[in-house]
Amino acid sequence: MLLPSRSQRRSGFTLFELLLVLAIVAVVIGASWMALGSWMDERNLVEGVDKLQTNLVKARALAMQEGRAYRSSWQQGAGSYRIAPDEVEYWPELAGSSLGPTTSAAASLPGGWICNEHLPNNIQFVQSAGMQLGTDSSMATGMVSSVVFLPNGTIDIYTDDGMEQPQMELTTTNKRGDQLTLRMRAVTGSITVYNPRNP
Figure 1 (tube, rainbow, N blue to C red):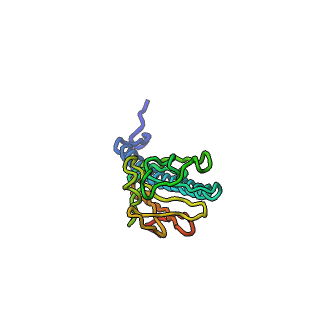
Figure 2: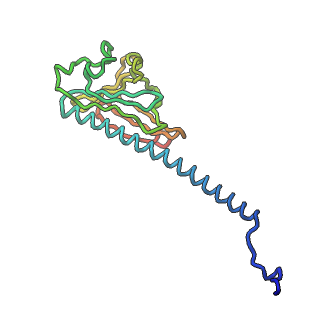
Figure 3: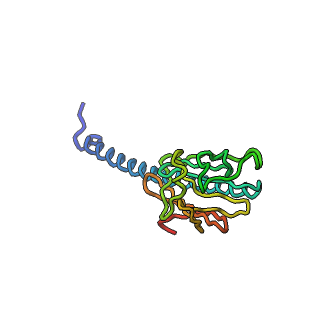
């Protein structure tokens, strides 16, 4: 029996060729994974801010519907926020503050919508330029008192020193540094979202 000559032997892959293909596949998977991670981070930011905007719009609508004010607060450097009727029972940590609630739930409507939410993982509130609101009266809870939605559809916006502001911007960011900002206007009560890097 004759053995096949070298030229007739079936050619295969060398170990070097297999390692080269595996290295290329690993690079492609790594790049795809990074792109997917970036996309997920951006998607979480958009979804978190959309939900926050929806909750704030709901608070404004309830304020007009129920005839009582709703307060919103959030925690700088974290992703927690809270919305509840602007009454002492719902905001005991702000009792006695010049910018705190002055009405009582007993004198108002019973019940009320309470929203305690968190932005998705690794998304947090950052201080917007020129606005630090309510830190003097809310240090105990770590929440920053921000805005009050009034029954007439407008929004009360004050700085720490009690100065009324025509608008405020609440900026959120993810771990990659992507940002989205909510802009609230006092007189119109509008709540819009924009990218501060591309307004």
